[in-house]
Each structure stands twice: as structure tokens, then as C-alpha cells.
Image (cartoon, rainbow, N blue to C red):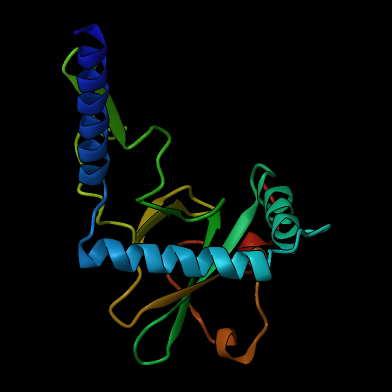
Length: 188
């Protein structure tokens, strides 16, 4: 009787494994398309593997950006163009900052024995934001330190430089803050 019990137990275990494995396969059309896409990607990577760079121009540009903007008191020249093609400018101390930039993480992770939940964290001013203010920028006038904000979009663009521009379209730009280009040439 024991050999029969062992055989039946083995058959039952095999059947359970087979059914479990079958239940794990997803034969939906979406799963089939995903497998086709992955198969194509695997084939292309095998035939055309990515080359490894010995030099990264992107990293070089980022390093130059860091070297340029890490200087305290560095001035930025922000030229705004409206829908009519007219230009104005601000001279700011430091870079204009998007409302989407934060010094703290935008989310808190709350964990308990029931699991983890991600929830919105309050901003630096103790209130909650929707995160949809990425087109609003703020900065400080280079001469007076006056706070200013501007919004990009709705037919308004801005161009940021670390020195005044002499391009023809910028020559007649109207100062929009207290600092004029002539005033802002000295680093504080």
C-alpha cells in the first residue's frame, strides 16, 4: 500500500504543479503583444548591442553647468518674449527657480504592518501643492533683492544667459525689474 500512496502523492503533486504553472501564463492578447515586443527587443540587442562611450558630452555639459552656476552672486539674464515678439528682461542674482524644484522630497512614505503608502508631503511653507506649477518661476532682482515671479507658456518664452546678450532681438529689450543690464555687470 505504501508504494501506491507514494505514487499517488507524486502524481497529485505533479498535477498541482502543472495546474499552477498553467495558471501563471497569461495568454491575453496584451500579454502576447508584450512578449512579441520583448522578443524583438532581445533580438535587436543581440544583433546591435549598445556601444559604450569613452567620453560623455552630456556629463561634460552638466559639469560645466555646475562650474558656471555654483559661484555665489552669479548673475543671470532672463529675456522674456511675448506673443507679439517683444522682449523684456530681468537681471537676477542666481538662477530663476521653477516652483517644481524642491529642497525636500515631494512625497512621504508611510509604512506600517499593513504595508506602505505614498502620500503627498507638505511644501517648505507647510502647505500642500498640486505639482502643476512647473511653468511658474521665481528669483531675486540683482540690485534690490526684490522677489519676482514670472510664468512661461501661453505664448511667452524665456531665454536664460549668464551674460548680457547683444543679439539684435535683445538690444531693445525693456527692463522688467529694477536692475538694468548696465547695472548688473558687477558680480556681488
